[in-house]
Length: 462
Image 1 (cartoon, rainbow, N blue to C red):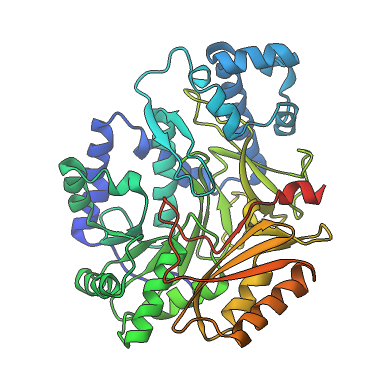
Image 2 (spheres, rainbow, N blue to C red):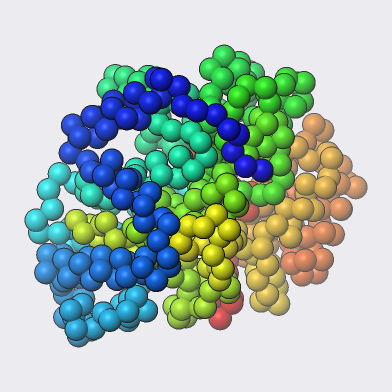
C-alpha cells in the first residue's frame, strides 16, 4: 500500500517552511540544512554514501581520540589511531563494543572536554535499568532531520494534524506551557498510551474523529489496541483522511499492521531507533526499511562479537556519526536484525535493514539449548479465543510463567492446552505456570512486551 495523494494545506506550508525552521534556528539547531542535504544524499549511489560515512567516521573518531577522556585512554590502550588505522568502514570492527554498563561506569568520561549545552536524556528502561546519557545540538539536529525526511516520504509534513499515542514519562512529564504551545503550532495532540481502559479508548476514538489527523504516530501495540477497540465498537475510522500511521519502539507484527491499516484506512510505516541509538531506519512507501546512512553505521554481530555478513541475523550495533560531544561508537542495541543485500526499488541508495527480529529478550531458550523467537509461543495464545491478552515471562530454561487476561478464569481445558503447547516447544520438563490477571501492565515506558526472557539467548547461540 502506498501513500495517498494529496497536497499540503496553506497552514502546513507555513509551519514547515517558516515557523518550524524559525523554531529550530532559535534553538541553535541545524535541522533544516541537514534535512535538505539528506533529501539530496538519499539518492546517491551506495558507494558515494559509504565515502561520506568514512569521512564522517574518521572525524568522529579523531574527535573522540583528542577530546573524550574515555576514548583517549581506550585508543591508547589498544594502539588505535584513526588517521593511521581507519582506511575503510570495516576497520571500525577493530574497536571494542560499547554497552550500557560501560556508559554507566564512565558517564562523565564519555563527555568531550569542549562539549557545551548538552541535554540529559535517558532510555525508558523497558528492558531493565534506564540508561542516562547526554546529547548535543548536532545529534538533536540530525535525528530530527532524519525523522523529518522520512515523514515527507509519505506525503505528510510538519504542521499536518497529527495524533501521537505515546507512553513515555519523559514526553508526558514535559508538557509545560512551552511544549504545549509548540504542539499547538505543529497541530500535534498527545494521547497517553499507558491508560487503556475502555472509557479511555472511547475518548481516544472521539479525539481521532474530531481531529481528523493526517498522520498517526505511536507504539504498534497501542495503535492496534485502539484499532481493535474501534472494530469491536463498530466505529468506522477509515474515512477520516489519515494518510499514514507511523509506528516505532516495538516489534511490528503482521497482524498489528493489518489491524491498524484496515481500521484507519492507511498504510503503516515502520520506524526503528531509540533515544540512545538514534533514528536508525525508516520504511519507505516501497516497503524497505532504509538506514539513515548519512548519520548511522550499522553492523550486525554474532554472540562472540564478530561481524556477520548481510543476509544473516545478528545483534544490531550502531555508530552514530553526529555524537562527537558524547560518542556512541559500536553501541550494542540488544536488538536482532538482518542487513539487506539488495537496493530498494524506490531508487534510494540508502542501505536496507531487511528484518528486525526483535530484542534479544524476545527470544526464548529451550531445555536442549535451542533458541526460538517468542512468536512460537505467542501464536499458541493468539489462537485461543478465550485469551484476550497475555504476557510470557521465561524465568529460566525450566520455568515459564504466562499471565492471561480472559473473560472467565482459565478452566482446566484451557490450562492444559496452553501447557501442552508450551511444553511441545520448550521441552517436556518445563514448568508452565498460568496466572490469571485482570490486565497486562505496560512497562514504565508505556510499551507492552509480549515476551520477556531472563535467559541469555545470545549465550545459547554460541
